[in-house]
Image 1 (spheres, rainbow, N blue to C red):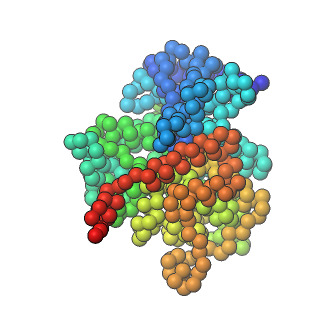
Image 2 (image 1 turned 120 degrees about the vertical axis):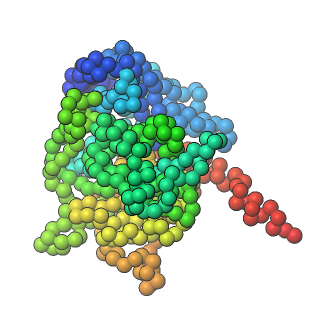
Image 3 (image 1 turned 90 degrees about the horizontal axis):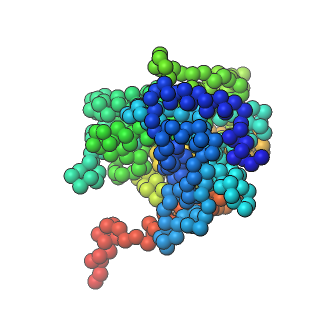
Length: 490
C-alpha cells in the first residue's frame, strides 16, 4: 500500500468524510478551498465545487510540484524546486480540518496532505517530501514514538502591522501611532481587530489576549496553545483572516518583519513545552452548531508537562527534559535562525538594536535580550523568530533540536539573568546569531540535525528558494546604494 493509499484508508477517515458531507448540507456550502502550505508559508491549492467532495476526498486533486515553491522562478529564469517536466502532486484533504469561511458562508476550506503522483516511476503515491505540513506530522509522530508519547504543544505570538493603503495601492504608514500598550491606540484599531477576532473564533481560534505593540499600526493577538501541527494550522488561518479583513477595510495586513526602521519589528515568538498524556476537547465558543468539523475546534488539554520545575531542586529552573531541550536549541541556534528569520528583511530586525530583538545565543529567565527565555513555569519562549516564519518548518526543526538535546543529554549551561549587553561588557563570551540570511543558510547547510527536519526534496527546495532570494538581494542596486555612492567621487 502506498503512502497515499494508507492516508486515504486510515482508520476512521471514511466516517469523517461522511460527516463533512453532512456539514456541507447543513451549512449550505457550495465551494471548497483545498489548501496546503508552500515552502515560505504561503497558502496554495485549488477551489472545487462542494458537489465533488466525495470524489476529491478519495482521489484528491492534482497540481504541479512547483506549487510547493509558489511556482516562482529564480534569478536565472528557472523554476524553483521543480521544472515544467516534473509530475503533478496529489493533494488529499484532511476532513477533520474542514471549516466554513465566516466572510462568505457558501465557501469552506480544508487543509490537505500532498503525495507524489500515482504514475511516478519512483515511489508512486509516496509522501511528497516538499510538503512542509505533511513533514511536520511525520516528524512529530516519529518523536512521539521514540519518546514514549512525549509530544510538543506550542503557542505563537504573531505580531503584525495594519498599514494604510495609499492612492497608488502601496503602504502609506501605519494606521496608528507607535505607542506600546496604549489602549487609545488599541481602540483606534478596534473596528479591525474585532472583525479579526469574530472571524477567527468562527474558525476555531481561541483568542486569549491582545495588545497594541510599539510600531505604527502594530497589533498582537494570541491564541491558546495546542498540538504543534494544529497550532501551525491556526497561525496560517489567522493570517488568512487578517488578509480578508484588510480587503474589506481597504488596509494592508503586513506580516513583513521590518517595514520601518527605528521602531520594533514584528516577531512571532514560539512558546513550547513537551507533554505526556492529555485529552482532546472541543472548545465550542458558539454554543450552537459548529461551522465546521470538530477537529478545527479541538484543543489538547491536561496531562503532564515535563518542562515544569522540580520545587525540591529549584523552583525556577525547568526539569531535566526541559533543560535538555534548551541545550538542543542552544546547540542549533545558528541553523534554526535560517528558518525563524527566513528573509533578507528579517535581519533588519537584528541590526536595528535597542528593540529587544535577540542577537545572542544565550538563555535566561524573563530575559528578553537572549534568544531563548523561560517565559513562565513549564514553557520556554524561542525569540529568534519573526512574523514571516513558516510555522511547519519551524515546528519540525525545533522537534529535531529537542530530539538531539534529549538523546545526547545536552547541557545548556546556567541561565543568564543579566542584560546580555551588560554581561558582555563584564567579560562574558557569547556567540552571536547569524546576522544575514546568507550566513544563516550556511549554518543550516552545516547542521545535519536541523537539515533532517527537511527530508528528501524539502531541503533542496528550501535552499534553492532562499539562496536565490539572498542572491537577488545581493545583485540589486538599492536606493541606499545610489544615495551613498552616486556622487562620492571625485
